Length: 395
Ligand SMILES: *Cc1c(COP(=O)(O)O)cnc(C)c1O
Image (cartoon, rainbow, N blue to C red; front, side, top):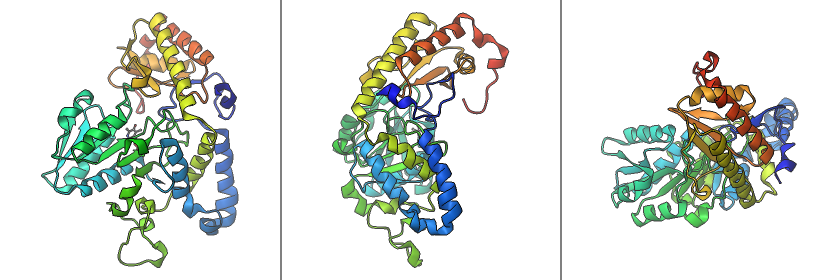
């Protein structure tokens, strides 16, 4: 399945792309679709396209496509805004569900934006709200019946370690707290089943494994039975039951449409639509097995040939997501040298070299070649060259 799909992507010659966990590559179909949306839809139809080209339906229609990828039912996922905003929306809705409680639980390793958003929301809600952070393996102790919501990222952006979604959700529910999962590093990488986990909310982005491009919109899932009672914090006009009645008073739309805020980014939605077409006939468990085969091969070759690198990801592929990280003192410069040689991964402070494995456009030959280049960078100490040392704003 892997090699057969590589030609659906517009990857530059000579590049092995191990960073699809941060920004997926450009699918050829996206290029065509965005040009078509520009010329035939915006250019030709002008404002009529909101109706004639169904621009207004995009957030819900694309939500239904993402639903399939995360195990949700149609009508429970909405696409729009950024992941940081969707974290805010989900957490504030969760806090509304248990208004007498004041403690938000997350883990110390969570992605900073999720924690910053929680901090900001707590500040808005008032002084008696607090954020309680526990180490990822100590959540049991942190979740008790004073907890208002549990907010976690399923797959750790640095180590790749994965929480057991069903188990942690059960713990939260036993304590009477709604559970919010951030699927940023899961959606499109590993099989996820939001329904069987019975989590209350899930959010994620579409520019990582879903390949919808820089700035692509995020998504929010709400368990269907909760949707009618969810009160969105950000009450924009497009989440109104009848936006074009221009009522003075806000009335949320009946379904998941209430999670919309303002005008959708139509060009990015078009890109997402074309990117999601790749998933129509994909078996996620096959994709996941292929990813495991690639990452296991990478780990074993790196450990054999690059002893200076220390694996910081779980060794058991079922305990991680689709990326693998190694600690190395000179990791930043080594990654710059590697990128210079056509093998693109990324770096996360303080010393993590991170490699993502997306079987849609990677095969075993790519893995073998990338370890060969990595070994060369290390053997020749290329990380010690001054031109690889200067930190750039995006790592
Ligand atoms: C990538 C990522 C984000 C990024 O949020 P944006 O609003 O899209 O910039 C947030 N949280 C997690 C866990 C991520 O992995």
